[in-house]
Amino acid sequence: MKIPQTPPALDALTGKLSAARLTEILHFDPAAKSAKGRYPHWNELRRHTPPAGLTVEEWWVSLKWWRRREYRPLALRDLRGRPFVVTLPDTLQKDLHEIDRGLGFALNLPASVTGPEARGRYILSALLQESITSSQLEGAVTTREVAKEMLRTGRPPHDKSERMILNNYHTMRRIQDLRGEALTPELVFDLHRLIAEDTLEKPDAAGRFRRATENVRIEDLEGTVFHEPPPAAELPKRLEAMCRFANADTPDFFIHPVIRAIILHFWLAYDHPFVDGNGRTARALFYWAMLRQGYALFEFISISQILLRAPARYAEAFLLTETDDNDLTYFILHQAGVIHEAVAALHSYAARKADDLKIADKLLRGTAGLNHRQQSLIAHALRESTARYIIEGHRRSHGIAFPTARHDLFDLVKRGLLTVSKEGRFNVFRPAPDLRKKIG
Image (cartoon, rainbow, N blue to C red; front, side, top):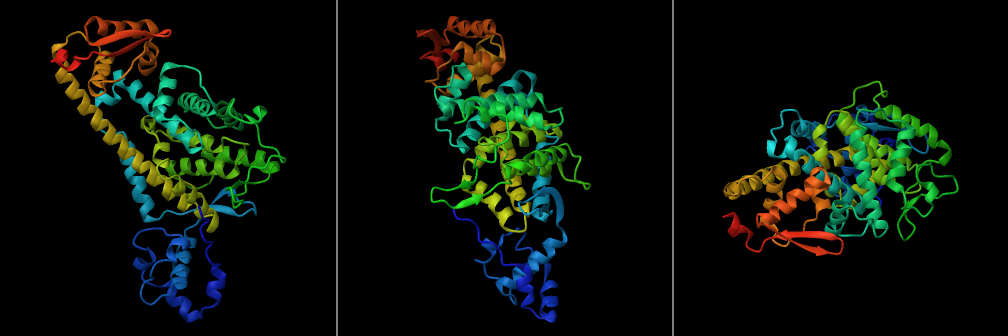
């Protein structure tokens, strides 16, 4: 991936203009300055035809002048001590409105998804998805099927990739318990320790700051440096400032809760306080912030599965901010779009599951006495004729005791809906070959 071209210095551009021409440019049609409602970086803008009457450079001067008027500085500083800034363009406010609507209290997700009987199952599904894809973003190499099998059965991880996923899973579960707590440096260290345990070349690096001798520059195989984080000596002070921001102690103006969570994500990734695991820790803190600020339905959402579809755009969002006046609006817009897409995916997923359960309910009407867990399993078995089930996986999926899970599955065997065979030390259950006929 190429580093976006740094915009030309605004002072240099305006210095070439007469006072009369500069006044004319700065009063140019606001509709043209909006770039059709988008928030383009110079790297994109320079490739487009400017509005009539302007050169590309003059178009950039006009856009930047209006943006700078709205910059709001944050406590996060770059290597030279300059603040990062935020703005609120219309396109971002629209995204925030849609996110609030999608995650608000009025959201009409079906009880078949959010009801007490199903809630744990769907939260588990989201946790599995986020744990796997967040680790894959950082280089974990395994299939989702293998990773899900490990998490559902509780078997030990076979390699570093599986260990990363297991650690992420434990971390995401831990965050759900921490939503009511304020963020502290100690808590950040605890989360990193949980994320990085047994995955680092230096085992003692889990849960501590990187040292001055530990080079963590982000670069490609050819040596192109994409990001150089602040010196190790500055990390304690910077982490304290990050925690104050996360707890809404700073700044002295209102920041929308979703924007605050996104900035927290960026902040830890920018400071890169650890030898490794910074990306996973940053995304974990984003989830903590969303849950703490009242977005309870984020339990059902995975953002990393969206990020994994276009990891280069995710990385570019960091670089756009760093190459243009520390303008965090670029990163915030990207992440708001990701959240918006994840919320839409939740709605679509909920609708599909509700339809599945209606179909399963219709099919299962002739089979009396099945509890909701058994109905869910049989609904899955009707769709996946080659599925395999074990007692421990059923127990974890529904958060129940082992004897209860065992009774569920053997009762389905007794009814002729599942078959069971011994594979090693496990009883493995499969859909009966004539399952659909028996249900009918």
